[in-house]
Length: 294
Image (cartoon, rainbow, N blue to C red):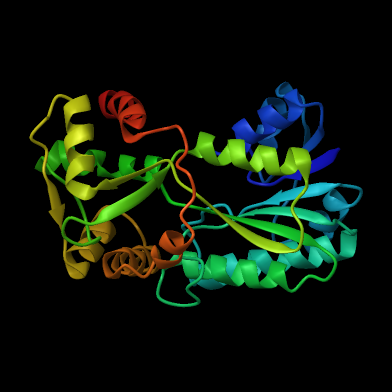
């Protein structure tokens, strides 16, 4: 089959492309960077260089494809982050409709049932809405948990203050996922293309309390007593801004953290909880230790 993968060679897209190529598919990878062409071609895929704001480019790239994997790459420059994410979804929907693509696997997130109050994930609610409005197109929305690699943002906090933390609530259970586990499920869906209508699939690898996260990662870096500290929304906001994030991005992350603390972000996940993926926190701890020591 001819499959288009968005997301360049990111954490999920790169392993996804590798699996699809190995399965014999013709894969085109969309990237905004000309510098990625050589790496994309080295995997056996075709590079399509352009912008997700260019509907004509997306339409031309999607035309002739049997299936498309869509995702919204992170951006730190948006003045309205939710609107930016939603607008990318509008562009995807317009290009899918114009190109005649009939099968779409879309990367969304836990919490995407929330039209407001969940930071950037509420932008993904907008993406899902746009894709669900397409007539005659089968769409599978993948809703993974909290990416393990987001925990890497705690490295500076550990080195300078000896703690991990967030505004997720005291002793909160968090649902984590490894990009490889997402890529495996996305690849299976694209290999078979047996999904119909508009559907949702939750994905997670492990579920752990915040204190347990600190203990496991702390043990991996030689700090077995590493504590997890619950931050107020204000402290969390100020810390992110001091770390260099824009107020727009920081406010959205604080809002998402508050949605985790309230339980609303994971409410629909728990109503539709799937089988856990293979990559546990202890597995990721090795990656965390390598990054910590780098």
